[in-house]
Length: 294
Image 1 (tube, rainbow, N blue to C red):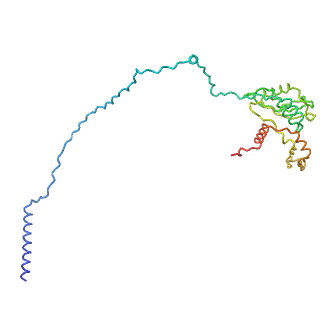
Image 2 (image 1 turned 120 degrees about the vertical axis):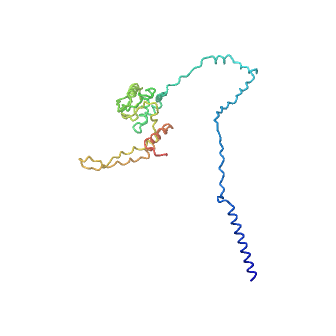
Image 3 (image 1 turned 90 degrees about the vertical axis):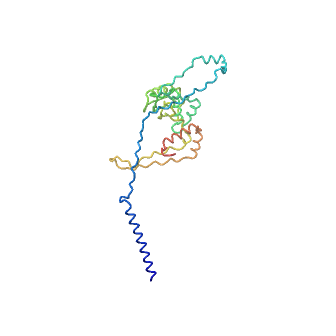
């Protein structure tokens, strides 16, 4: 009991002393105890504009020249012919004017030989096919050189020849050049005597003479001449609306005699490479398609 009272008295004494110290400190300090920060010092910086001169370009040192005292190589000696060639004036080749080009031309083919005319006079197949081709070749050989231009063209004739080979009639069916027609007619008038027709009868045919600076055909092909001509089919349903309707019977193909075919094959000439090539080209132009071969 006595100890408890003593402890309480000590605690109260310490508390009172602490309170006294606190009050004394508060009284001793000034009321405005907060320290104010000192104002910053002002520093003045002065700038002065100074013009800087442009930099000077670096000095360029001239390249060292080679020593001019070095001995130069001696000039080569020229022969008299070379010196004369150098001194002679050079020939200048005049260029063709722009837009112009040399004109295309084609010489006349050679005239048929006597052997070719003799073979043509014996060929009776396909309306004397070889005789007709040789006649056209003879005319073209006498027309001269064809030059590209307005005089080039073609002319188609209807020709009638007597059995003895003389001309009976020459009729112009159409022409694309008056000059070509005139030259062809002049050639027909000046043709040499021709052999008799192969059949011994008047020969009537149509032919086109080409007077152009490019190949317009070629020799014919003979290997199919023993075959009969295909029948001319017509439209059985054609009707004019007035006449009575009659169905026209279509012709039937001609039957071949084996012996006649064998005899025919004996007189066929051998086709040349030019004839084969021309035949293939004609077939391509007639039956070819622009869509094939793509």
